[in-house]
Length: 97
Image (cartoon, rainbow, N blue to C red; front, top):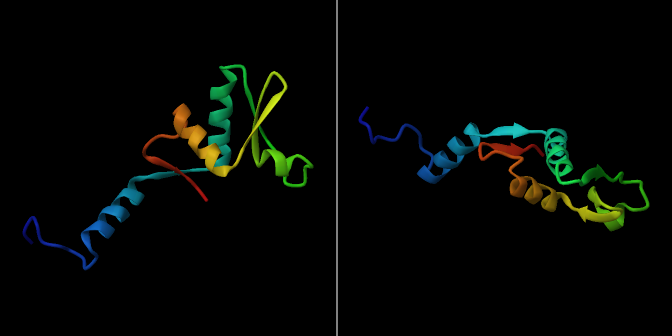
């Protein structure tokens, strides 16, 4: 086979997408939570989970950060963005669903 011959019938963009996903490593929500928790602790903040049956869940969401008795709620997307901003998730990792 020549260097540029295609081995499969998938379009090149699909092959590239599959290759990128295959090289990425899944990380659990729990592991990512602990990474973020350690990182924000260095800044005097604490990260918590809010239970779904909590009366505060609708107001705060599934996660919240506490700083001097001020609560900041985070939804799942904000949680992932915070992880990226803090460098808690590597480029070769993705959050398991």
